[in-house]
Amino acid sequence: WSLFTQCKYSPWGREQTDPTDFPNDNQKHSTRPNPETDEADFEAWLDHFLFDGKPSMERTNMYRCYHPSNYQSRSFTTHHYKARQVIHETELLPIWEDVRARYWNNFEWVGLAEFFHESKCLLFYRLSLGPTLYPWADEYVAQHCTCSPLSRHTKPDDTVVHHKESHRETFSNMRPELLQRIEALTKVDVRLYHMALYQFLREIVWLESRLGRRVLCDDVLERNEDELAYVFKGDPTSSVADLYHKMKTIGEPAVVYY
Image (cartoon, rainbow, N blue to C red; front, side):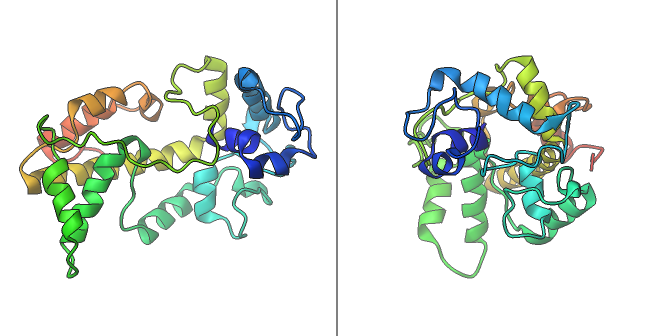
């Protein structure tokens, strides 16, 4: 959705897609895009990159914008500088072993948008363990990384956006046929996110043990239950809350699924 709306609404995306037949309610760059047709346009955009229900090189026209097939994992493993493009068929479904190796070999810390505040707590605490002093990081962890209602972080974080239109709060309430198309285009990305989520929760449990208090609060877990249900499809762990509490109880899940 983010890639699609970037192509449809951002100044750069509109300039890129204007000479093409990008699904935009038949509107061109000189006309303001119509948010009322977003889901229909999104469906047409997804269908464009699928052939017989699978990502296919039959669909090499990206409307001069983004190819959505496993975009996140593709950016880890591509050998050309424009990850938004697909040049070789192997890029449609990146090899999982390569994606996993790039993840573990190149990232000291990974934050998750759904747990933005908690990710900051992890980063700031880890900064405090190094040789350089960061008083502002120590202060943030001490004052805001808690579930106590008296000192919880409630101030909205600054958000950088490329366009103002059609930002969704939830995606789990999309039509099932749209979710099926998204699933077909993100099979490797879902594995990558599952791995990142697993590692994030492990580090949160570690942080909470160091601080002696909860950092990841029940209402935050509950807020993300439906949105992250797709990650646990076919998984013995039924939800993000179940996985977190299992880690709290036994240290980490008995089985690693990677």
